[in-house]
Amino acid sequence: MQPVGFIGLGAMGAPMAENVSEAGYPLVVYNRTRSRTEPFAERGATVADSPADVANRADTVVVMVTDDEALEAVLDGENGLLAGLTSETTVIQMSTVTPAATEAAAEAVRDAGGQYVDAPVSGTVGPAEEGTLTVLAAGPERLLEDVEGILAAIGEPIVDCGAVGDGARMKLFVNLLLGDMMGAFAEALAFGTSQGLDYDDMLAVVEAGAVDSPLYSIKGENIAAGDFEPRFPVDLQFKDLRYAVEEANDAGVPLPQTAAARETFSATSGMGHGEADMAAVVKFFEQVAGLSVGERES
Image 1 (cartoon, rainbow, N blue to C red):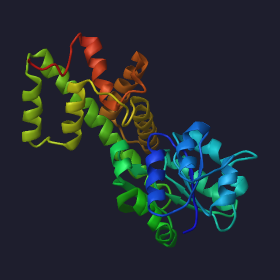
Image 2 (tube, rainbow, N blue to C red):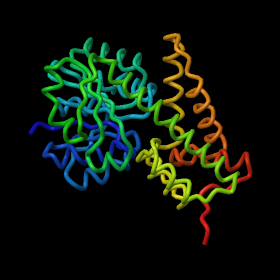
Image 3 (cartoon, helix red, strand yellow):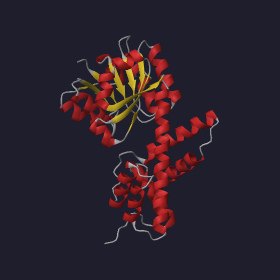
């Protein structure tokens, strides 16, 4: 198999790259913090010196970085990814960025002679480790077929979302819903706690009814255990809600619930919980209302 380049080895990128390697693809890796490449080097991956070096060594390059600014930084400059592209290079952009950012990146890649797939993923660290992320693929059908093996190593199902930019739009759609759901869940738990309701009883009622969701089951248990290890950090959820609200403003669509959730996540970050899991949004309500959500009767 041909080598696959992987740029961005954070909490999501590292397990995604691991799964690509386990599918049999030799890896060429790059991360701004070089220490993150060491486990891959120990298992035989090639460590590149720059994004351009990745493109020089691999015809397919996956990019999994934090935001619009990080994507631009990977692409541009003397040692940026664009500098190493050839007509044989396909860039698979899997980060959560705005539609405008992914469309601009696609244009820059094509102008440099390469090809581009817009394929963000839906899911958190657990699905990333298991290879069960939902891949929101967008781009020319021929290109999607060419990279299907790589995408399948990262997740399933692979949803064909349309043209470049539509993958980013679909990602903002699902993360908008995710943030609204988590904010509402934390708020409801705070209300129930203020009313003297038993925490286990609240979870049982949620799980028995129409509002049942794996999100609530998992995060409900995490909150009770005081487990806020970052499967999906507060700061990233805030960023995605901010992007969604900005896109909606441009389209003339009001998002009052999402705007409220955005501010709740912003406040949670401001309280010092930005790097904690998104479930830590419950700490905003705890601190403001003087509650302790998740306590159970002994």
